[in-house]
Length: 250
Image (cartoon, rainbow, N blue to C red; front, top):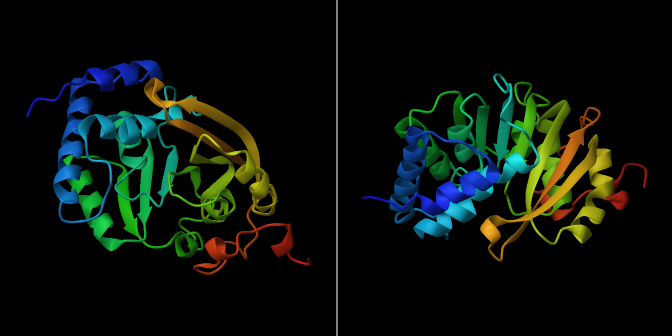
């Protein structure tokens, strides 16, 4: 089936991401397989071609607004926490093959799908692993081992920071994909970010392809090691997000 690439190419141009024909074909194959597998398992509510292009592919690649991947990124490592159907990790891997990426998801079926996509697209230097962030962040091979942690997962920023900051090495950063309205969530997460060894470095707001879809990135730099007690055991980061009230000694 022939797909019109005009919208995708316009978006790539706006983001200043040059892709080869082979890379564009990888995105199309990914789209086709996503829609096919979505018939038998719950991967995404968005299945229309142009919507997937904008709301999944271009949204994932918008990370270039806060992080330059055009220079020397060979050997740079990234973990995508709560990756779901592979967003943003797989689009970033297709566009920037030198990135070394781990996709983490708590649902085994989805991890199976991700491994099938990785094999089908012949992607190197990327793997999908099954587990919870709370458990993996305590493992020596994962804790404070990544230059970047990214997440499009739907959770408040305090909770996400507790899931994600433990993976990031000092000098690296956690970048959260968020909707446009972020102020209240950001102020509520301030204490958690500090407790976990991070500092909010940047907040970038933008709209996708001039559509009525406000987005933002929150960039949190890792300034010092995360205390060993974090992340807390499974369930607690979402049930009781970190705040001044939960800080030790309070």
